[in-house]
Image 1 (spheres, rainbow, N blue to C red):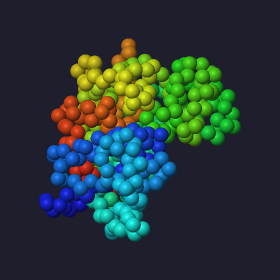
Image 2: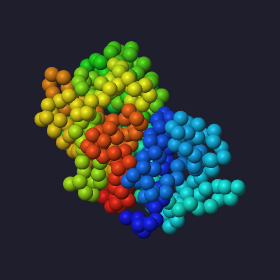
Image 3: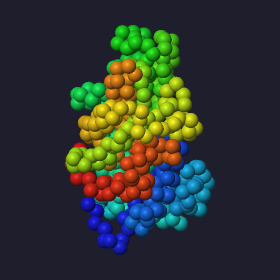
Length: 374
């Protein structure tokens, strides 16, 4: 664990934005984190430096208000932005910040990558933190990459006995070589309607629901715009429920999953806009399930979290199939949204953990991660 005298705040670099289709949502989540870190029990414990990553991949230290982070206007606040980099030299643990044409070191004790989607929760920036020897909030390189890739995650859940829907996968090369053969194989394995997803993309990005061959063909084109690998999944008519999981895998007895909450989607399926923008969806905590089924979902969330090697936090998404009552894992999101309508902080608040206390706990978990545990 990083040593900090009681009187010395922990120097935290909080990253937001990113080269991702979820850039704007990351900014809203980061603003919520910045506000939480200024409130008890975090107030006085952390010296926070915000690092914004533009859509073009430029890194800027930003020392302005959280409201400008939330609405994206931080980028127009040029006087409060300074180019910066993270030093990969693990003997230094520092941001390199350019001011008045001169680069100087700003020491850092830990990082919070409040980043969603590609280049944020897929293992890439986590790898940079590992090179720098910097403790960071959330899953490690492998678990981040695994959970981002739906085909790999499904394969590991199959191996671990975590139930989920029937699925198939195809890569761009195979589709370009013989698209009709790929579609034939999908139709032979899965009944319509079929969900078509890019294997690696952010929340609900590039996902289509196909009811026939022509729609399936179009859906593949949409998915390939986001990734080189496409996942096809069985449609499940059921309740969409989610659990918030927290804890480190080197101390599995303390890994905890909340009771599930339920999404009442405002569209035919739970879209990106529903999750983050329009607020049409409603959230019920706990979900409308009997106690035995709530227990089953909660236990499966913890099992999936450990099976995929998650650390720090993840949101575990499930379907409870109508008629059969089957509980099927949809996916794990390794850095879920922290907006005003996001499920993860709402679930934790329902368990008695305020947003500020949750942020403090997640940073503490980061500082206490045992290296090589996952």
